[in-house]
Length: 151
Image (cartoon, rainbow, N blue to C red; front, side):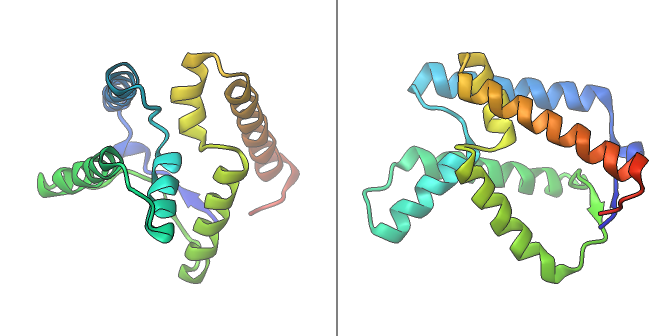
């Protein structure tokens, strides 16, 4: 699999603005409602409520709806969705997504959830998780760029 990042579409001000909005949303949710803005946890709880017929908490649906509507609104403005393109065959998309979901459950959250919501709360689990994510990323880059192993 080769990942091609379109550097021309990456702009520092967009990244700073996006990061500030994510931080603001996390702070509002934490301070205003006492909830942690971990998307994988919110989505997992929604799925659990749906599968087991549990009493769903409406705020989760509103939050995830806002996430999806934000992307839809961006596209309605005629803007391309940012992200990396990949050469991964389509048949691998679903297994990759399932493995990612398994990893987030195993790690008690996703990379951004631990980084954005766990570290500010000084969660030891999140500090360790982010450190492991960073080391894993560095090892992967080293191996794929300097050892000659290609993913």
